[in-house]
Each structure stands twice: as C-alpha cells, then as structure tokens.
Length: 351
Ligand SMILES: Cc1ncc(C[n+]2csc(CCOP(=O)(O)OP(=O)(O)O)c2C)c(N)n1
Ligand code: SF4
Ligand SMILES: [Mg+2]
Image (cartoon, rainbow, N blue to C red):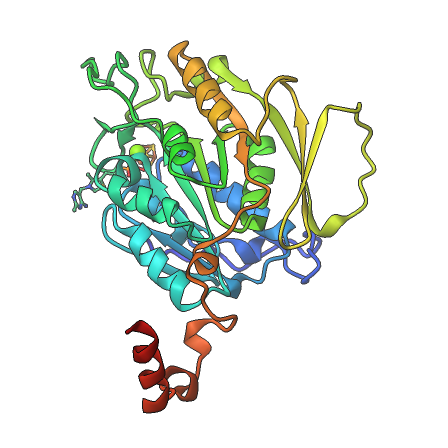
C-alpha cells in the first residue's frame, strides 16, 4: 500500500455532481502501479461511476485481497471505508461486513489470482449465497505482483513473457459466476471505458451478487504476442454483445431506438438499465444460453464483453435469511437481548 497523498490543488471549474463533489473527491492516493497497467484505468472507471451516481463516499465499503489489483482500492474513494484483507479471503470478510451493516454499498476488488486461484472457494460461496455487492476481478491472466506466473485464468496454449507455454485449462470466471447464481454478470475491458463505466454504474444499482470480470492487461508481464490478455489481443478479439445505457432514477429517455433493439430492466432503487443490443439474437435474461454463448465464443478465441446476464427478480442474502429491516449494527440492547421469556418461546417452537 502507498500512502502518497495527491496534491489538493484542483481546477476551480471542475464539473460538480448533484452533491457538489468533483471527481477529485472520489480519488484516493497516488497509484504506484506500472505506467500503462490496466488496473489504473479500472480505478478511474470506478471513480467516474461513483461520481456520476452521486454516491456519498462514506456509503461505500471497498474490500480487497492481495495483488496489484487488490492494491487499487487505495487509489480510489479515499473517503470511503476500506479493508485490505488476506490473499483470496476478501469474499468472507465482505460477507461478514455486509451481514453486519446492509446499508453500505459493498465493492469487492480482486485479481484473477486472488479469485480464481487461492480464493476460488471463497469467491464461489460468496456469490452463490447472494451477497449484495459489486465484485470486480481485474483479470490479467498472471500473478502480476509476484512477477508474472500464469494464473488460473490464463488460456491453454498462451505463452509467458519468458516463452513458457501454459498447458492447464483456464477457469472462465464469467462462466463460473453464471453457474453459481450471480444475478448480474458482465465482462469489460480496461481499454474500453465507454463500455465499462455504465457497467459499473448498473452493477452498483443492482441488488444481489453483481460480478464484473474486467480484462486488464499487465504491461510488465503479460502484454506480448502469445498472450491472450494483452491490449492487442483483446482489441482484435473483443466481441461486444450489447452496449449499456444507464439511467439513474427513471430519468426520461430521449434517445431514439428501433423497436426490438433495446431491453429495459428496472432496478430495485428506481433506476433503469437499458441495453442496446449489438447482437440481435443475444438474450441477456437467459442464464443457460449466456453460458453456452460465452463458452462457444471462448473456444474460438473470442472475448465476449458486455452485460451478459441480468436477472430481473434478483434477491440478496438478507432476503434469503429473512433478516430484520434495521442493519444489525444499529440494533440496540433491547432488540439484541429480548430476555428469557423470548428465549423460552423460541426453544418451545423448536421442540
Ligand atoms: C497466502 C498467500 N499466498 C501467496 C501470496 C503471494 N502472492 C501475493 S500476490 C499473489 C498473486 C496476485 O495475483 P492476482 O490476484 O492476479 O493480482 P495481480 O497482481 O495480477 O493484479 C500471490 C501469489 C500471498 N501474499 N499470500
Ligand atoms: S506488475 Fe502488472 S499488474 Fe502489477 S502494476 Fe505492473 S503492470 Fe500492473
Ligand atoms: Mg492477476
């Protein structure tokens, strides 16, 4: 982690959002990542998404594991809550925090090593339990922080910078998220901010486990010919199935679309996700077809991006557990210790 503060100077005419904040109010400390690292572009997309959504920084909790990607929460939302946990263990810390206070916006920021290698078990259980969160993997196919070993998302046959070939089958985190019940599944590319910012905004508005796999090239160890996570490879093989327009709070839609080209899905918070189809046959509300589509195109070496699946009837862990309206951390002694009479009643009901 770095503790280098950014200079406070800012241009007086910077655009302000409805809260009177500029994007600088959503920044963190100065990044220490390599110049050109995809992870920095993702940080800037998260900053822009929170600025556009008029989010009060103190309402966000950002959590991460270990890796260059897991360092990035330090470079954004400097006024938000943050917890940098242990390698691969962010999901359980996030689950616990969410159970204690469901009023915050939870953002888990992870890497392909952090989530697909050491943290795979944690990742899948956090998603299948339905934790209300935005879970982002900054996927570069390598362990960047420890000098570029192949991670579990590296494609079979891709080569390392030193020339070694990866013979292991890859784990596709998008396919995994679809299989285990994520209610919002997307793939983005750090080099396409226009696509990425609305994806992040929509994921924040979504209630339930929202997962975004973001291909994020590692310029130090995985940006050469032979890599399938390089800037050149992803630009050449990127197949966007849709483009997302996100309207917070049901603002009037004044864009012209041909009928059938757009899918509108209202979210719990009153916002509307509008999907402009670029592939007329792609149906983002069909989980099984999404799985098949993504796998089919991956076999051809294509990187399918966009909002790949969205459940209109999503629920979260608190709904599954039928927890009380008030967040646990705001309950008083009276609610938490209702007395011997209540305990007797509960025990009697279980006999
Ligand atoms: C328990 C544990 N095992 C191994 C490590 C060493 N380690 C640190 S970061 C990392 C991999 C990070 O890869 P990824 O999550 O893909 O992040 P990136 O650096 O590529 O962004 C490893 C293996 C560690 N810190 N802790
Ligand atoms: S080593 Fe790779 S992942 Fe880490 S900061 Fe450098 S470019 Fe980014
Ligand atoms: Mg990585």
